[in-house]
Length: 190
Image (cartoon, rainbow, N blue to C red; front, top):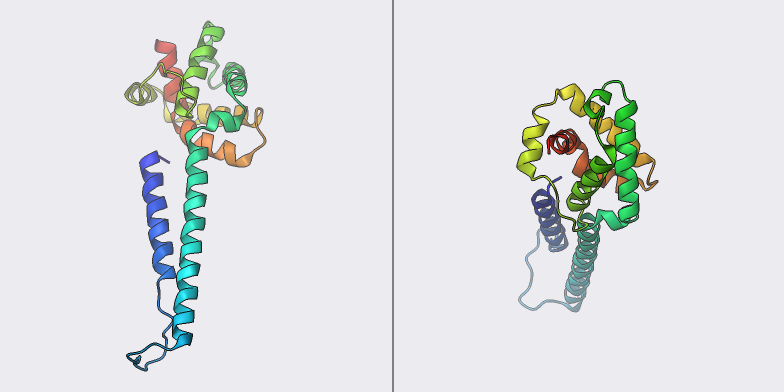
């Protein structure tokens, strides 16, 4: 999910939560008097407090999710784990009959380093990415849909070998999985 879409969903969720906390509890058809009773004021104060707690809780949850989305490298376990993921992925690509022809005869140590930098950049680690999004998209179009799918599956399996956290795997797969075919093809062309 793109960062902009995530922020929009988070804002909508907070807005919805705030509105649900502001609904009136007056379900009877009677009109209110000019002077509110102490029971009405207590209920109103309790509703306001509950709304504030819900909004704070939602805000804290959103901040936590945004923090986790901004640096998945540290959640994965650091640069060493990212290097291990890159190496594992390229090893799996070499051993997969569907994709092995892509990397046959290639210097995988150089490719591993470039792939690690690309992933580091995409996952919030701060490295300089060798490829732009436009280059990744253009390279992805050079692959068949089957090849891109096979590379995405291979990446997911490689990710299983470096982390057991399902949340981290899901977030990394959503960020990188659909683009990994273009990333590998683009890096091979550099």
